[in-house]
Length: 117
Image (cartoon, rainbow, N blue to C red; front, side):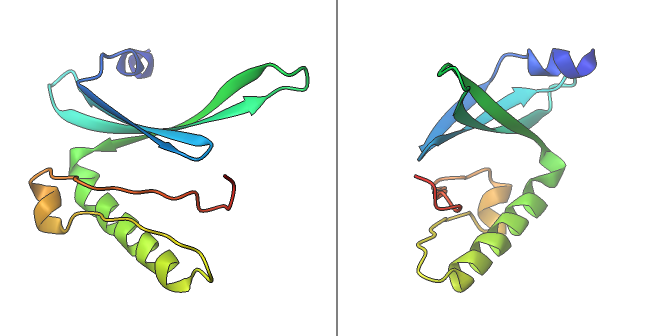
């Protein structure tokens, strides 16, 4: 029941990012204790055999104590892909630890990594 209550909470801030056939939603919400947290949702339009469509969604909950490690992991993974992706063009600017501590996420660019457009 508590999980559903958190899902129904009103967003404090929301930023949709369209990337190819996917849309990513970065939503800031508040816990009962007024701590802010981030949900990242990937939404992709899918079609049934009868031609009707639905949205397939995957969601990650990210809490403030994990922001720095999450950003570090994202930076490392994007850097690895950028260095090892043959012929692919991957670009992402994720803030340094100093910037992420200040909450300054100014320019995130996610490319469709699986080649679908």
